[in-house]
Image 1 (spheres, rainbow, N blue to C red):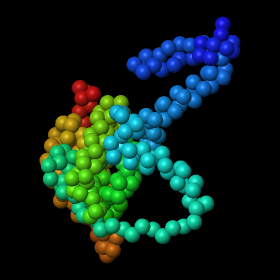
Image 2: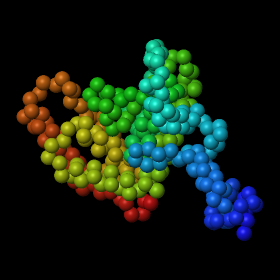
Image 3: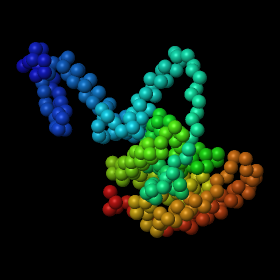
Image 4: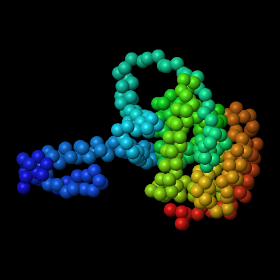
Length: 291
């Protein structure tokens, strides 16, 4: 039997070719055509999916003409290796002058996506795509900064968005909306195909808060950030989203230059742990019926 692709060489193996409608077609082909088909299949898969540290970033839609934010993510993720390889061979260039930045208002953003006046990007963090998204912002000359970045890097994955003075607010807001769409997609994945990751993250946070004896403000804030996603999905029994928001806004982070001695710090952390145990002692994660 001759190869069903080239019609010349003898067929040696059976392969499956993916058709435009998503179905597959079985073909009997020669070794050369089988190898070529495998290369084409890998190219098609790479155009849809990029690996990250904790999962896969899948982009749907028009891949030839992606929207600006998605295009920036693609460039940020796929371009990293090439840039690293080029760094040693190219001469150093003076860095571009940093443009004056302005803070972008979050007015009109769904409150479930906000902590205070900062974007809550915990979903992107939990699925492992936050770093790629922040690199995409940088590629678009924008930035995301933690409201209290002097204390600790990105507590609770809450960010204020900055945009250059040369960019219109309309464009900046369109990019922010694209970022928030990715956050919503991330949250949807966490309650669907990545439910085990979400269950584990929420359950660990609850277990610590129910049993801790020492609890720093930053650690409390980070765990509240995770639990906030569950509360926003009405998946916490005995705890409302509004109360979590109140607790997050009331926390005061210890600063690196605080001169409190270790004993006093332990006393403060112990009292905070008492508050956490009392607040979450009767809180439960509602898993069944939510997926």
